[in-house]
Length: 223
Image 1: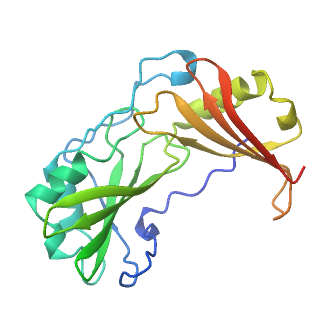
Image 2: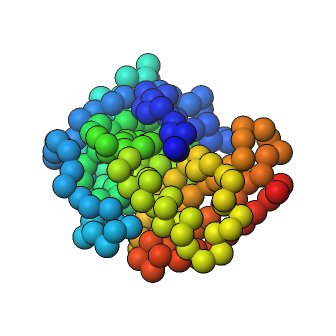
């Protein structure tokens, strides 16, 4: 069984070199939120596809409702930047998260904005880190740590991976984490397998092409 991380949206800000101290983002229900999801696993040939469910208003609300002492910097709270952020972040099935968290900081003329959330039935959370230049309104994704895979998909992805050709090194390992890849990738997942919690334990990192049911990449270390 996967060892999923707890969903702690109020403490998800990453410290970025050159920025001010990391803030604690707030949790804001999106204006377009829905309860539950009828999406079916991509691993079983379902029609669920990543999408961009958020509007600029959703992003602005998350930034304005930040509970950190200084809040999200005011220079980030513009319609132009919020629209660019909404156009940059994806969810695994095109549905809103159950809640959105936002936090940010600025240094000189560049800011870091972090948007995080998790689907209602997710095995983990998604964290998007963006570099923002307020003077130009430019928004660039610098990191996407996407663990918001529906819990119901995890076992199916694990079984598909273990059943694929070339999966022999995984036989005695435990699945410890699953990530999904955003567009332009389609039905691509990263699965981490480990023999234990020790730093030097056997590790296998897999990139699974769920559409084809094949292992696209396999890296084994310490085995």
